[in-house]
Image 1 (tube, rainbow over the protein chains, first blue to last red):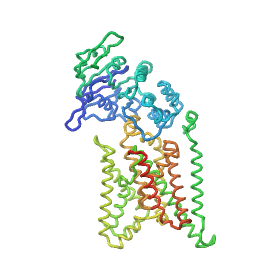
Image 2 (image 1 turned 180 degrees about the horizontal axis):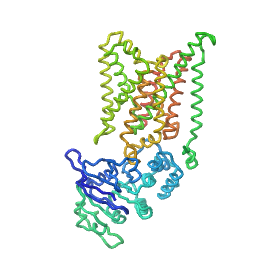
Image 3 (image 1 turned 60 degrees about the vertical axis):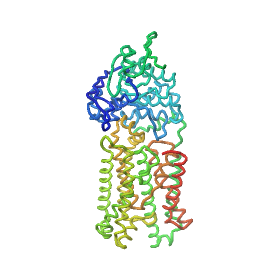
Image 4 (image 1 turned 180 degrees about the vertical axis):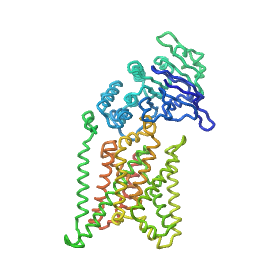
Length: 252
Length: 335
């Protein structure tokens, strides 16, 4: 379980997040949604200990993220940001191999190689394993980053906009793979998504943020109503329920 | 330790044969070193003159080797810590820090202090001071929530200029004879370094290299930047400060022996990334060191025995390095 208690994040006088008190249960896919500047990414980076909250306490599986040694925490929770750029020239396999660092401190064992191969196969990257990252398309690169996080083999995986740069086909494939990681590998996946319909179609829980606060938590069915969505996003939304999952229509 | 490269190798056929490149480079280093030592030695073998000449040359070769180690490793480490391949340690005012320390020593205690304090104690005190200062400065700048690498670099640049000005002010106030002795200390060159310092410098560098080698896997991660390092469980801030402190020590040793060098490390590190075809520190670091030695030894040999202008080497290297830096910057088009 990921547990936040009275977490706030302020820059000077500006409060970008909180106070937030929130429990995200273990297992399944949880989506963070909300308008721009709602604090979704901030919340994710605080849980992933890339940023330190101004006040409050965050625990992941009972470990306080600010006081637990990084090496230990890196085997419990992993996080991937939207923007990833490396100065070192790496092949896909090199990159995914880095995911094993928390386990082997850089000296890959047979088990590590196995895990790397699994992660590559899981994201259909095996044929691209020897390619350099700068020779890949944006979507392939995005998958390689996700493969690195999967190879890290943590129970909790936090992804900031994993659908960035992905076309329709690859976005669907990525969400399917994350769903499988949750179902087959038992991972707890927390993602920030921009497209509310992807959240509705794949997530078990949706947490809606607005102006730094949690305004709604629930299943996609609970959340996908015109009233809630209009409150969260501040724009008229129509919800269609004629398919397998609710669909928000807000384009015009 | 299992050899990871060998296990991975079949999966990446495109990876160049690193062993060959190492072999060729090592051969160049050995040939150049033998050339510098034995070419055109005055006096008959066995005579006193011959002995003195060879002794001097051994000192030169050892100095070159040590400087190459310092500059190559310091620059690669600096690139890694800053996740940027344009900056060099001198931008952080590391050389300037050394210069201001030497100047202050002469300023407050007179030039006699400079020579009277030579030896192990001074090297230790100097290293401890550099380390202490770097730790304090960079630790303080980089600590807390607002700790930001770019701000730290900017402050480093400003401090470097500040140190430079402070040194200039103190140098202006020295007596001419004190200033003369200080200048000789600050503007060393490859063929005229202090042989007494050599063993102590080598000892310090060996210690640093040992630490660096043990950290090679963590350095690979550190080069991926702050967020990835944190995600992979590295104590990012502590690692960066630690690396910068090691850089300060290496630069202090190199500067003590041959004076400030701005672009040499940059050339060597950049070429090492390109030519070694690897991004792992356990390959890049030794490659950069060999490349540095090869460059300096060949340059030294050519200048000394072909153009009879041995003292010019550091100037030529800085000139070529500066050009190389500009070309690299223009081709890359951004920082």
